[in-house]
Image 1 (cartoon, one colour):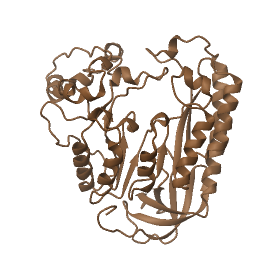
Image 2 (cartoon, one colour):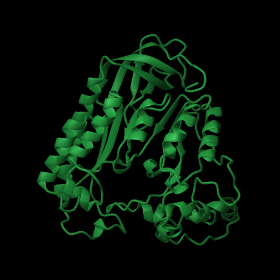
Image 3 (spheres, helix red, strand yellow):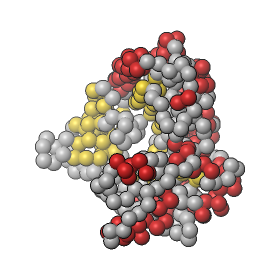
Image 4 (tube, helix red, strand yellow):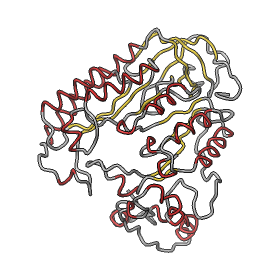
Length: 399
């Protein structure tokens, strides 16, 4: 919001001493010193950050030395890790890229995040090692579009090469990759995500809809049958792979037939987690100019209808896992109340995909442990599992 609406925020929040955008990152400590000293700082003036880097991806890394891209090593920073952990969770996110080159008609992210720019593999590896030293056992790779990682570094398959190296970092037990574009999925990446020890067979696929004509108006790829075929391809290699996605309903021009097509997809896809959002105009996007806008009550009705279906289907998918054996990363132990032990199975990402509550013999179990457990029940998307035993710690991968 500070990047997009700097002056508006400053005028509406007189209690804020400053509103800083990405361009302030390099001198952030100086700006904070000025705030403490009572100096006035000019509010950030928004601009289209897609214009800051060359159109050609391979020309961007050198040009980025003069552009502030939060999370990237610039202006002589080198590979040092510039972050501080605010908790002692065994899970941490790690940013591997910034920006996006896709031009989805409903999305404003590229305009204020800029063009896609990968972090160097050495920086990602160094930060992973540092996180492991801080007690992190699961590293979740994040960016606006992880499937594009490496294209500006001259290797679109760089993620497939990097994943085994990250999983081999001493102390790291899990690597999880978020936000994958269906249009950019490739056999080699599916193989890397389903067959690399220590890398979770987890697919956070941004489908957004499944009706072909809605997707084209969104400037996106695919349809119901192609998306189902992609999921079949994944499950042929890893039957218990986790899969989640988000969907927009009420997009301009969406018909009842389009909604029915989305329902057909959701009832067949067996997704573990589903986010559903009602369409609303976003400043500066192409879709905001479209004709065929639906009435708010129509959007609300479709949102409620698809949300009910999503809840039903994800609960059904969780129930399918009853009787299976899962590996659970212990994340919290409630020592003050009933001693409940909460974690996540391989198919569950933090904060979005539900949890697994552990029962049975819990003596000696600690936060950060990996335990094997048998799923005995489900509650919505959440699982209840009885501990079988600890997961053996080897050397190298998954150590």
